[in-house]
Image (cartoon, rainbow, N blue to C red; front, side):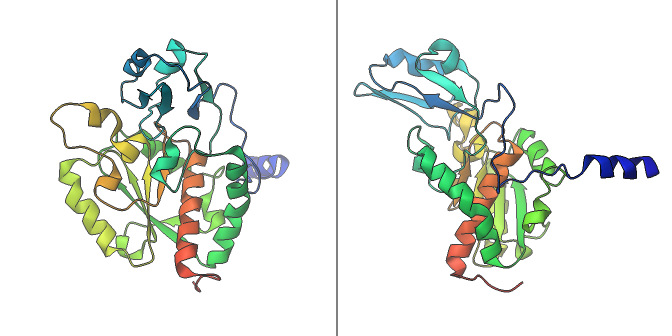
Length: 263
């Protein structure tokens, strides 16, 4: 016990300072895919994507990050047109802004600077209800990491709750399978207003691979509920999830009005 105490004193705090400071991804980290050249693409390039995230029309190319599972097939097929971007901050409040090129770097930096201020402005703790509607389990590993000493979301006033009636944020993972539609709707209806919904992971954003299979009704969360924040990735990293959660806190703060409400 004393050994651990002295080790802690020597090491100091290892908790990330995000969102006050940018979290640097490790070398080779693939946070999202960027389109380097959207003009003059052959229509065949769309066929390499297993989730139909690439569209070629009218001589232009778009890539939907809400469908991308980061398999890298497009990067390998045409590295002059696609590349991986080492970034954690992939979340968006609008589904349409997951289309590559819609979010400017300056916008991302401006949002990051205001995230912690939004938490303070709410002046209360925020409780999260997580619902898995059909994920492969990878998102759950990343969500569990949010409570460890490095990410420590409690320092920002964010807490998980098993009860939707006590929740402010609904964090949904996985494509929405038919058996989970009604339970998801009941969880949302049990939450008090104001509330926000986060689609976490590519499956939750669009249905991803499950949506491309024939004879399945599985789709993204927005086919059942209004989604306030989309966090693509397969799976999204803990910092990407934290970025999405703080974006959602901003939604709550906006609905509550300036100053928020007391805890």
